[in-house]
Image 1 (cartoon, one colour):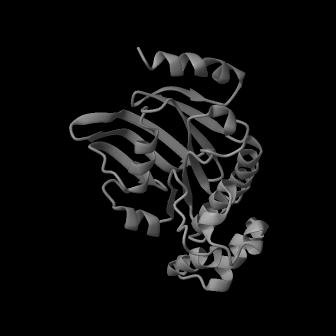
Image 2 (tube, one colour; image 1 turned 120 degrees about the horizontal axis):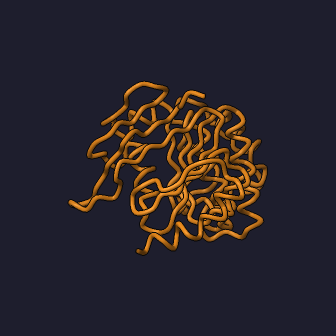
Length: 235
């Protein structure tokens, strides 16, 4: 299966401190890849490099097999890469409808953006006139996903979707993520809590101290190794 998003030998740093030591990752269209690992492993940095938000020191970024190394975030967004960062990234003082209206910069009309959002997440239609910051954490995350889908992404990058949310809400959100992937989107999900995402992931990679220490199908063997990999990162 050919990769829609691929990182080859990516190294990245902050102020001379190396965060990624030659990371290789690939995500095909229609696939959910879970990037797991403890705090400080480099997971968010990997997403930022993939989205053009943080530069790679070396290595290559490919989109659809084409070299996109060094492209900035705007160019990658226009090419179909959508990053939904940790913390949801909605505008709390704006209503749901106003948050969605801002996505018309993609060239889609207001009605189409709202149809995408309200069809995928009916609760947002009922909250259309409500300030986003007054909604529950799960509803805000739905709004963040709906805003991302309005860009018609080819690649969706999700950072800690489960943060601060109840397990049942997380399960519902990840079912939506799985459905998004089934429509042909390549999805790379960063999660610290593996159980939240492994049930819907097609492939998993475990990042420890900036290196991919384990990759493969999200089977019982990988799940059993996770605690050792996480605990071992402190050595």
